Image 1 (cartoon, one colour):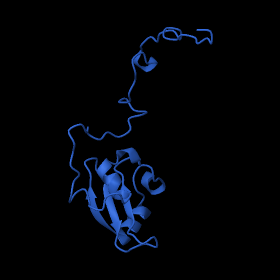
Image 2 (cartoon, helix red, strand yellow):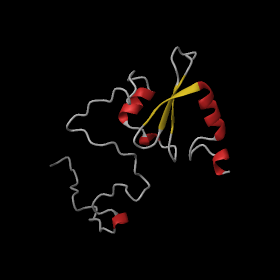
Image 3 (cartoon, rainbow, N blue to C red):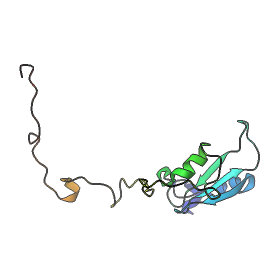
Amino acid sequence: MFKIFTWWNGVSPGGWFDIKRRSGFIGADAYGNRYFEDRKVSVEGRKRRYVIYKGLAEPSKVPAEWHGWLHYTLDDVPVDNPLARKGWETDHKPNMTGTVFAYRPKGSLREGGERRGADADYEAWTPDA
């Protein structure tokens, strides 16, 4: 019942019907997101592309290669022609803000740390100096 009236925790039944009716499945990523492309060319002169998120609709869960395909930066589907990984590249991570995995710097109150006083690293500027 909850999925019928919400779009942020997965696609609604109406959305599924519409996408299935006019689009074809292209592929899925490691996070379970599914990608679709229209069968017909739209008014803009290209086929529209869609993502159906697994779980909450969070765009930061889309890996770089699929983001490029969705935004027409890459023509090749990442399943057919994956991007070459460089040695310095790290694995994609979704935005962790608001979760227990969020980054908390040293001294963060959430980590139970004690912050230094505001004057610990501050030196006032004077025009005479």
